[in-house]
Length: 167
Image (tube, rainbow, N blue to C red; front, side):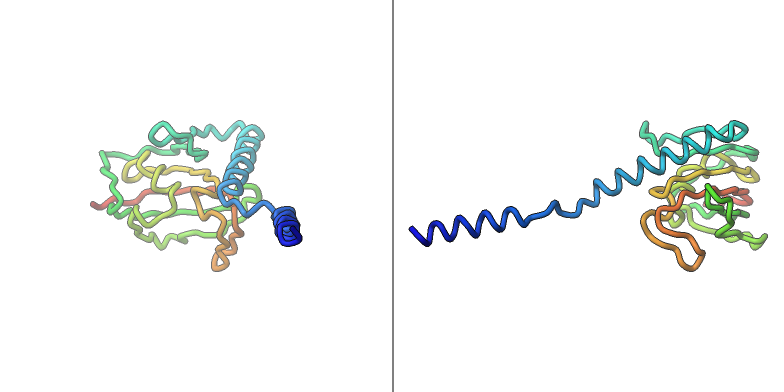
């Protein structure tokens, strides 16, 4: 009888000591909601920014874009498409530049860039210019980018000119 009582006492003590575990999905959802509110507030406070929400496969991404110039021709985009760009990346709320091409015109494979670029660049053609406002989950996510001075969960604002498209 003492053993049964001891086991029950240990079981009750063990269960009361349990805390809710870390849930990455809940944290990601909370960050997505916070990002979306910040972007919505920014757009409401800046009515001159006529941004369109980018939906992918009928899923709301939280990415917004403005086609400044559509470019010309028809561009086919795949994950192996190489894009040559001139760009400036800023933190949305402060406007602080964290990355820019400085007229170097780098080329990237579309499959190797942040998801916001993958989804938004096909909205323009060669020679086009686009502004992309991306929540952290479609940019650099929950990871610090110390080499460019970008903290985790940063909402970014890119101005990109698409100079060339090569398949």
